[in-house]
Length: 187
Image (cartoon, rainbow, N blue to C red; front, top):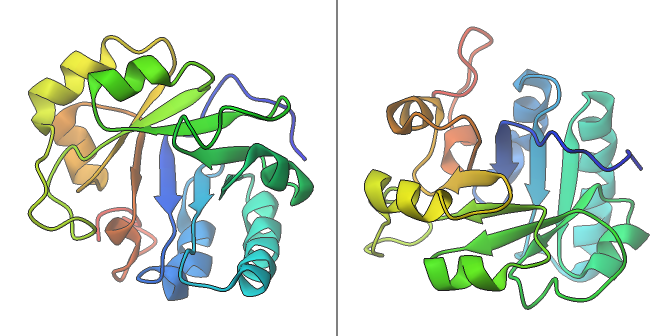
């Protein structure tokens, strides 16, 4: 397992059934030192652990961090670099970096054990069609109150991050399309 980091990756892939087939290719094309948040809720636990192990090998070979969506204890057992989830799900456990999901100022206040937060949804997203979005202004107002690094999530890709003028971002769909070596993040 990698040592704890004070410098979080700028770009994160958030996995799910939609982008599973593209994950290997995306991990190879991402800038060294990016991150993967492994969710894969669609798989039974045994298959989920097997897929995690395979992607962890690939991610670490490329210098990427990998976070397990689940308890801190399970993330540690699986050799994850971090745990991912809600503040409630990650409130217990030993010292392992925590990526906490946040959707409001109230949730940000509850994320006391977070080492970084994923603030969402910034823009409209296929994951939650029709859901209210934060938009750039509310995203920035909430992010300004954070005591830890903030990762933008929801409708994000390289162009959206540039438009938002935010360096740290995560996405699901941005990694589903046909990325090219010249511009792997603008799918």
